[in-house]
Length: 385
Image (cartoon, rainbow, N blue to C red; front, side):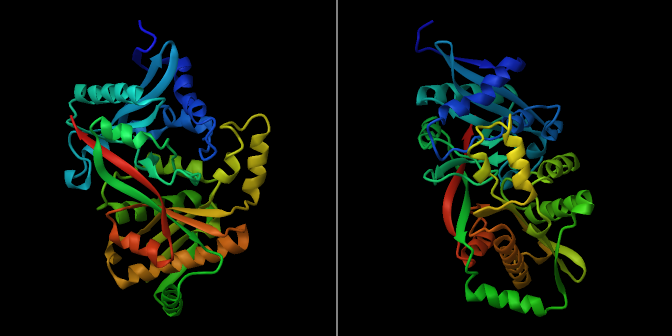
C-alpha cells in the first residue's frame, strides 16, 4: 500500500462510529466559524435505535483512510418516503442521497463520492442528491456563501473548498436554500406595520402562544400545519408521527411558549411560526461535549436564555390561504408579535429567517419585506448515476 493510497471502508462497530463522528472536530479545529455540535446529538442521528428516520430510511456510512489515518467520511442513504414523492418536486423514484460529508482534500472527496454513488447504484438508484444529512429536516445543503460568520442553531457549516470539489465530481446544482439576517431592535418597515395593525383589528384573526402544558398536542398541531403548508415545496418529505414525537422531545428544552405562535382564522389553525434562541452562541465554547460542567451551564442558560440572535427554523401557512393577502398578513403578524417578545424577554437584537428555497417566491418576499438580507446560501446538488 502506498502512503498516498486512499482506502474507503464501511463503518461498523463503536470504534468506527467514533471515528466517523469525531472527524469534523479535527478538520475544523482552527476554524472559529465552525460550531462544534454536541456529539451525543450526532451519535443519535446515525443510530437506528434512536432516530425514527430509520423507520423509513436506510444508510451506509463510509470512512476514508490514508496511511492509517481517517481523512474523510460520507453517508449514502435511501429514504422510502422521498422515493414516494412526485419526481417534479425534486426527489421521487430512483433518488438516493449522500450527506454528512467531510474530506481533507479533493482526492479524498472524489473517492468518497465514488463510494457513495456506487452504493446507490447497487441499490438500483438512478440519481443521487445531496448533501442531505440524513433528512431534509436535519441539515440539508452545502454552505457555499457565508463562510465568514458562524451558523445559527440547527444549521450546518462546511469548508469553503467543498463546493468546487463536489462540482468537480460531476454534481450540479439542484436547488439553493437561503437564510436571511436582519436587525430587529427597531422594528420593521411601515408596510409591515400597517398589515399588522389591520390584522389586529380583524375579529377573524387570533394569534396565540403555544401551551407547553399541552406540548405533545401542540407539537402535533404545528406539524400538521407544516405538512400541509410545505407539501408542494421542492424536496418535501412528510414528517411521520414518530418523527414529530422525536423532534418534540429534542426541542422541548429549548422552545419557549412566547416564541412559538399559532395564528387562527375563524377559530381554525391557519399558520404558525417557531423561533429559537440561538443556542450556538453557548455551544461555541463547549467543544461538542456537555461534560464535566457544560451541562450545568447549558441548563442554567435554558432556564432563562439571553441571546443576540433568534432563528426562525419553521414557519407555514396552510394551503387554503397561500397566495392570498391574508397569508401575508398572518406571516407579518406572527413575525412582529415574536419580534416584540424576543427583544423584550430575551435581549435579542438580530434575527435569522430560514432556510428558504430560492425558488419559493412568497417566502422570499416575506424575508425581504421585513428587511432581511441573504447571509448564507446552502446548495443541494444532483447527479445522474
